[in-house]
Amino acid sequence: MGAQQVREGFTELYGTEPDGVWSAPGRVNLIGEHTDYNDGFVMPFALPHVTTAAVARRTDGVLRLHSSDIGGGVVELALDTLEPGTDQEWTAYPAGVVWALREAGHPVTGADVHLASTVPTGAGLSSSAALEVVIALALNDLYELGLQRWQLARLCQRAENVYVGAPTGIMDQTASACCEAGHALFLDTRDLSQRQIPFDLAAEGMRLLVVDTQVKHAHSGGEYGKRRAGCEKGAALLGVDALRDVPYGELDSALDRLGDEEEVRRLVRHVVTEDHRVERVVALLEAGDTRAIGPVLTEGHASLRDDFQVSCPELDLVVEAANAAGALGARMTGGGFGGSAIVLAETADVDTITKAVEEAFAAAGFKAPRTFEAVPSAGARKAD
Ligand code: GLA
Image (cartoon, rainbow, N blue to C red; front, side):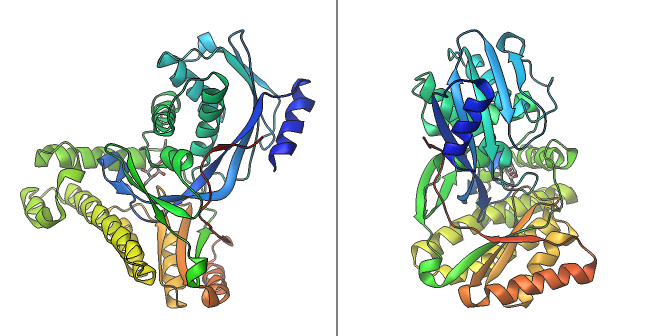
C-alpha cells in the first residue's frame, strides 16, 4: 500500500490530516545468524516490503493505534498506564516504542497512528522491527528529538526486549533503520559501527530469492531464549564478555576448554565460525568475487542446522532442493524454527530452482512455499 493511501486511510479514520507518513522495511539477513546477541557481526539488507504509518501528534497523553491489516478498531491507550509485559497483542510493539522513548526521558505526549504493512508476518523477515522503527522514526521527527538512526534502533530493541518481552538482538531494528538501497549492511553489533557494502546482484547476472516456508515462528517462545542463555554460559565458562571475543584461530582450544559441555560447545562453535563467515563474505564481496559467497551461505546453514539446531525440515528442504537444482548457495535466514530461507542463484536458473523447491515441498507433503526476489532496498524514511 502506498503512502498516499495510508494518508487517506488516516483521514478517513480520524477525520483529520496526519502530520506526515513514514515507512520502514523488513529485512533478510545475508549472513551472520545468532551472532548479534554475542556482540558479533551481521550482514542484513532491507526488503522492498515496508510498514507504513500515518501519524499525528497529540498533546493529551493518549496513543491511538489502528492497523488496516489486522481486524479490529482503534486501540486507545493512556501513556501513563503503559507497562512492560501487559500487552500480548500487536499493539505492544508501537506502544513499547512510545514507552521506551518516554522512559529514556523524551517528551512524547501522544499520537494518532494508522498503519499498513506489506512485510509478511511470522516469516522471519522482521515485521516487528519494521513496525517498531516506523513509529520511532515518526516520533523522532514529529517531536524533534534529534536521535540518530542507531539510537532509534537501540530504543526499539529495548521496546522489544522489555516491553514485548522477546529477548532479541539489535540486528533487525538496525537493518530497518540504517540499510541503504543497493547495499548490504556490514554491522558490528558491539558498537554498531557500520559499512555499506555494494550488493547489486542483478548487474552480475544473479538473483537472491527468499523462500517463505509459511511455517510460523515466534521469538518470545522459549527456544530463542535458550540459545541465548547457552551462549552466555559459554562466554562465562571461557572468561570472555561475549563469544565475539573468542578469535576464530583459537576456536579449537576454546572448545577443548569447554570439556564435556557438549551443548555449549556446539553453540560456541556456531557463533565463532559464523562471525568468521561474515568476515569471509565481506572480503569476497569487496574483492568482486560474489559467486564465491554461495558455498559460505550453505556452510552457514549446516552450522545453524547441526550446531545451533534452529532449523526445521522445511528450511532444510529449501536448501537441499535449491542446491541440488543448481543454486550457488542457500541458507535459512533470521531466527529460525520456521520462517524463510534465502537462495543465491544465476538469473538463468531461477525458474528451474523455484520449481524444484516447489516440487520437493509437494513431494514431502509440506504446504506450498512462497518465493520472491529480494532486491536490497532503502531503510526507514519519511514517505510523504
Ligand atoms: C531474530 C532476532 C535477531 C537475531 C536473529 C538471528 O531475527 O530478532 O536479533 O538474533 O533472530 O540472527
